[in-house]
Image 1 (cartoon, helix red, strand yellow):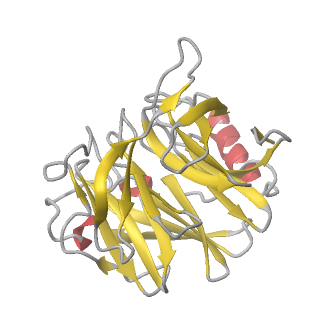
Image 2 (cartoon, helix red, strand yellow):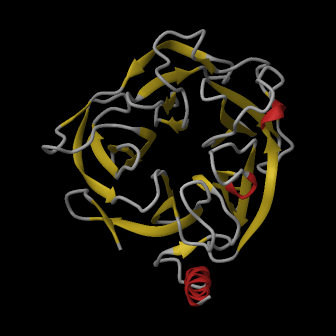
Length: 301
């Protein structure tokens, strides 16, 4: 009983913490955050750990969290089921998602079956979403070099308007998307990262790209378990050079993050085990501000 009370006290303290500290978003289990600022509000699209079995990553829907101030978060629950994609197999798992506001529409990039990435679209950030293509955007069985698992999509729009989607396990992948988001352009490429320290793990999963003061930052998990590390480069396609660790090993089997730069702040979203009853399959989303030093290195507070 004492341990349960301590865990509950910790979760309540995190919920009440200021933005600059580590902040827990909700009391419901969710993971794999994709944070965005749409229409004056913060939206975090997530894997719905609240409704999985607790023994596997077998969620069949995605969850949505919304805030106006980064302090109070409304958990809108499982807002979109994987069945939105009629081509997906029955009972398809719904894993780490991504979202994008583009030309007045809201796009939702959704890995299903561990073999395909679907694309849904809506007129509003919280839906309703419908299948945008009627087929997978990326399909392991169809597309050359899709990799072992085309999962964990992360979308980046460069300053020249070109759109790139990063994804994959064990070998990071990138593909350019069409300007109407109706498909991909050109081949799926491997992303090159060099300069790993001796005995360190290479890329595992959960790629993410952002740009800060002209520099491209490619960050990712090194595996299961893994650290979140980052590398930098002069092009969104790489190559990238290893720079350091952003999140160290956690006491759960996955490490997954995303970064949102908004209103002069760089916000790091990630998941961990902090709620009572949590674990590797029942994760919780947290947020923390990070900064850059004079050399562009990212620093956690």
